[in-house]
Amino acid sequence: MHIIKQTAIVISIEMHKIFRAGFIPISAAAFLFLLLVKHGQNWADFTNSGLMFIVALIGLVGFGALSSWVFAQEFTAQTFKDLLALPISRKTIIAGKMLAIELSELAITVLEVLLLLGTGWLWLRTPIPAGQWHLITLVVPRTFVYNVLLSLVWPFIASLTRSVLIPTALSFATMIVAVMFAGQTVGQYIPWVIPSYDLANPGFSSSIGYLLIVLIGLIGIYGTIYVWTVKDQQ
Image (cartoon, rainbow, N blue to C red; front, top):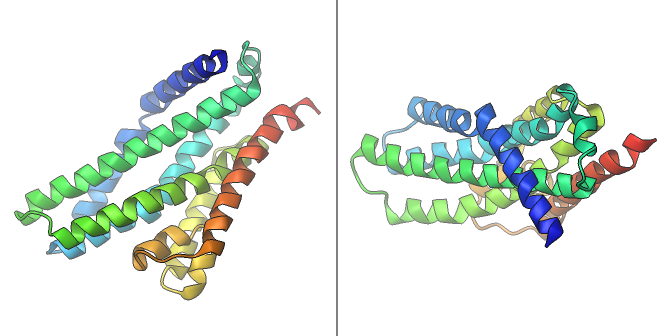
């Protein structure tokens, strides 16, 4: 219970930082702008454009920037040592930060889906067809899980390099790779391409691809723990 309370405190603090930094409204505004620029003339085009932005742009680059910033800002703001001086274990701090990242990513995704539905109704003046709604409910939950797991590697790189620019630049590079290989069969075996491949091939299944994504997530979690608990003390 003591660990749960400490984790909840860290989550609360980190969520406050994320809201104050404006990540959620900025992500929503960027999504809305792109949606209005490339909206299409029917629900099929509108939905496909919106999902592409949610999955590839916000899911890879946006989540990458967010997760990198949450950890890197402790080094850039020179609060890392002060944070570790608190009577809270480093693993609890890491867990709280990562859970805050995931909750923020969930909030961003839900908000963008609502914007997609609301903007589509206002623009097209017709209810969303059942087929497009089914596509959203099929693709968004799956790709959200993929992108959350993939985003866990950026805190590791941010902590290792003590920089937000390097992991953010790498996350942008993953989006380029995703766009390049989303329509190719090999895409189902490249972790950062799988969310976009799933969008292009709804309902596909690849055990190897799923295992690779989980592996990336585990590397991110345990790599971050290593940097914060072992490497920093060397």
